Amino acid sequence: MKRLFFCVLLTLFLLPAPALSYGESVTRGDFILLLWAASGSVPFDMTAHPFTDLTGREELAQAVAWAYDLGLVKGVGENTFAPDRPLTREECALLLRRNDARLNREVFLPDGAAQCNDGLDISPWAD
Image (cartoon, rainbow, N blue to C red; front, side):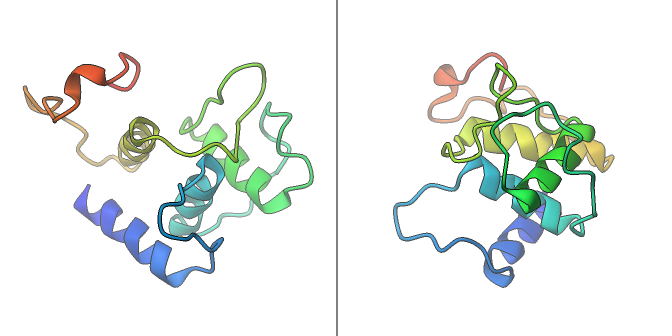
């Protein structure tokens, strides 16, 4: 997990990405682009996903199709991905955990791992 975290941080600093000002949120689309770039930006069929809200965004559609094929993303319902919606901490943790599982990295969480300062507010799907 530390390795992936380092890769994502390194990617944030080295890759040209949308400029974010202090206080701005990272979007769902931004994060998937970062994961895709950290995995080598593997060329992928940009139509290999069910989402209807990626039209005209070829690079993002390619990254989302890659993530969808690997089971990292499932969308937000009604065949939409919501690429411009801010990424929540829960979604970030879930995406990183799914990505680690894909890479056969340890994803075991010992008892009490969810007891963070807002552990009671974690959605059941993210816990």
